[in-house]
Amino acid sequence: MEFKSANMPIQVAAEALKMDPQSVRVMLQLGIVTWGVAFKMPGSRRYSYLISPKSFYEATGFLWEGR
Image (tube, rainbow, N blue to C red; front, side, top):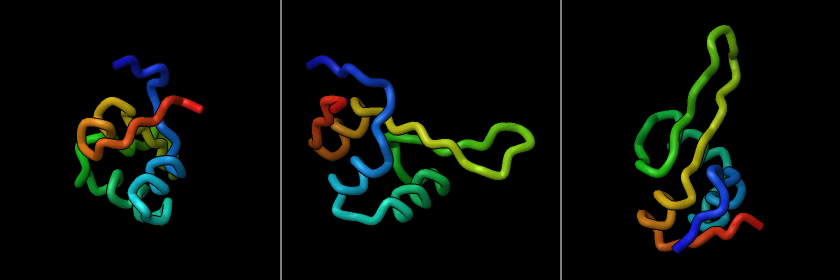
């Protein structure tokens, strides 16, 4: 299986999980999922998010093809 993108949008993950995007952000911030991370750059107040399409697929069975 080929994964064409390195990052899945929060909105896509939220729809796949049938959750609101803010819940997905909080799960990433708290580190309670294995398929993504939340981080802040030094001096920033805002989080950035990285969701691995491959890890998300392995954990949930949802395949995102980068559309």
